[in-house]
Image (tube, rainbow, N blue to C red; front, side):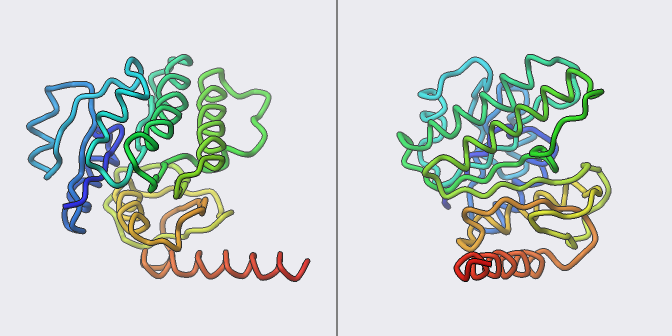
Length: 232
């Protein structure tokens, strides 16, 4: 089974992703900092490797990626209220993951970001929210500038509702929410789809079935490319 390194391997999305990767013929490699998560994650079909995102170097990330063919960056500091962790987890964790891919001989990289992080930050935004948006924006910018085969997924507000397998995907979609289960399903769907390489898409719930939604988003990208070629 091909290994897929999941950075932030005990997160809510990651725990929903592991069984989907197994079902698709991959070996999820859950990278976590706490040994106590091992039994739970192995029960989901994941191989567990210890990695402290904030303390370890990109060289140690590369060692943790050994034997994997792809990386899913699903880590996030969450709503802990700590400004500094938005930088050390959401940004620096992504940067170290990107840097580690070359020595680990990995090209495929899927990053979970957030909707509208390229928009201007409201002046009344809290310091924590500002730090979060800035971290996600910078991480996405770094990945876009890399030589990796990247896909950036920017979900709306995450919920723990049951997944519907119906989503709206595109460069610019209305604000909305999406079950974490559907985000995990989209990750699994784009991972082996070369048509999603170099794409940055937002996603919310209620739309087409995931495979159909991705196909529509791909066609939209091809249409934009044709318009560019014609100078429109």
